Image 1 (cartoon, rainbow, N blue to C red):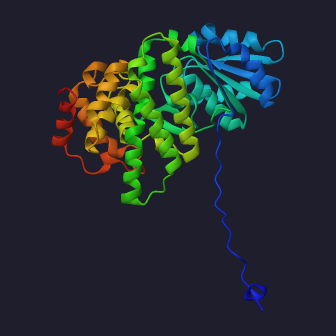
Image 2 (image 1 turned 180 degrees about the vertical axis):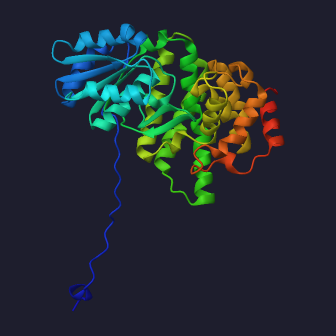
Image 3 (image 1 turned 120 degrees about the vertical axis):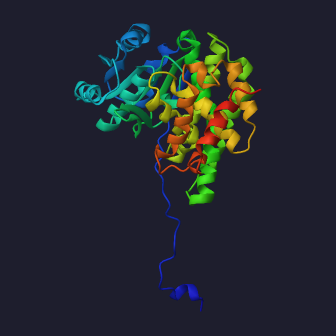
Length: 359
């Protein structure tokens, strides 16, 4: 008689589960706003939407989006002049009773729509007018607080519709900052691996592989990233979307946020309004890649080719402030262990900043 017939214990089963939210429709190309009705119909989102946009981007793209959808959808515009707790609450009231949201604009607008959609449990469509960071596709939102910017869990977009003509017409500084934000994935995953070895932090090899591949694409194609060219916008938008997907797979921003981001947030506190988020992440990536023993010169060369700053002076920040930011980084999100949490001394931080200027 087989022992299987008299087993008394329930067999163990694999019961690991994970919730991943990914964009279902991604449309990137020239003059793609005309495809928005088909996207909304495909996703069965409903008939009424709150269109969140900024003062400048409403005229640039928001009104066009509204006009394209007007025949079949009831679209109510909402101007978000800033991202703040007050604006978010006001936008939530405006979105009450709506079926979905559309965010048309830059990072602040997209993040506002993202948070409102999360709080109201509504889907939203991301329509970026610039490619300055990977927030256009991620589930994280950056909100300014008294102590600096805070990264919050929010709602990833159900769809992304990116018109390369509009994005290419934006200042090249924004596109270059978006490239730098993606290139910083290189050191983000090195920090994740370090946290896994030192702290036993779980990691996702799939998310890490996608994140690294995304950064490699931009480094290898750095010579193709030129001002006001739609091909450049197309390459960068695809990379930003992939970076956002990597974060959704990981269930956190780990694949795209390490010590270089902690340095960036520290700079935001010490020198607010000087550097764009992606710009300071790029500078931080050079430093943290050096600390990891990687090819920091190649990173610096790629950033230069793209047109992103590689020194504090290039964004109007003095070296002493950059040193303080390196030392402060360990206090930013202390639960996130990175190479900058390993006991950096002031003398070492000063040497690292000076290194940025050496050939």
